[in-house]
Image (tube, rainbow, N blue to C red):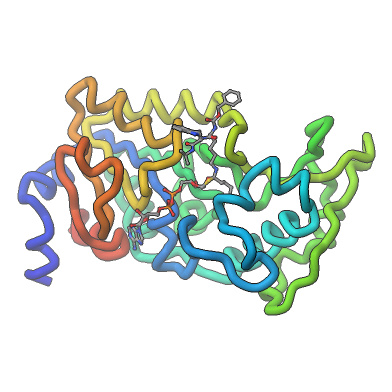
Length: 257
Ligand code: BJW
């Protein structure tokens, strides 16, 4: 425990003790200890010829919708099969004592399942599907057919996306792909939470993907202290006031102890 506490600048522990309004920006790293691969982990199996960065694009969807659709169905199943970790749980506990907002780039629901209310899902959700043309949410039975509660298929076959009952276009995953706009309300709410906070935590994100990665800059500009929690150095490290080089499942419970 002592060696883990050595990873903290004492000022970080002071900030955590005294903060009243905490704004969190989380990324894939916060779910890594639950067993969810981060975005920069290479793909295997049916998807091995792509990287996740290539699959999460409108181009991949146009080229091979069945491959992209199957990837999202299996990822939704995979997330259903794992549990929130100590980092997610620590944030949910902390929100009982301070005003804490979570803006996440993650499309999983592990913050919610740990008991947090998420202010912004900046990149959408694995569990929302809509028509690519008329934007009508997919019908309940269509989602039921996907059997998202089933175990991950170890040898998945490409699966054609269902059709919209309204306009016959394809149903697509409710996530934000590269080149697509983020949901404006979610982005604005996240930005406001950063500027109104007295402590910002940037947890488990590589800080590469814009515009989400710029959100903490709004806080920095106002002199709000920003702490990065990530075992590795990132694009964001140079800007952070403090860095905690530990996995979030270790760091967050210690910060709240
Ligand atoms: C741990 C840990 C542990 C490990 N504890 N930590 C050039 C310059 C600037 C911008 C651009 C550019 N060229 C293109 C752009 C724009 C582009 C972009 O930013 N590209 C970059 C790659 C350069 N951005 C966009 O296209 C965005 N849209 C946009 O700009 O729209 C403009 C527009 C305006 C108006 C109209 C129309 C358009 C959209 C971005 C959408 C991103 N979507 C994805 C996919 C979501 C769906 C899905 O999941 O499939 O979101 S991409 C992917 O990256 C996903 C993630 O949310 C996002 C961020 O990744 P994250 O969370 O940081 O994960 P990793 O894997 O990168 O990092 C994990 C970290 O965890 C690492 O640091 C580890 O060390 C750490 N870690 N274990 C704590 N235990």
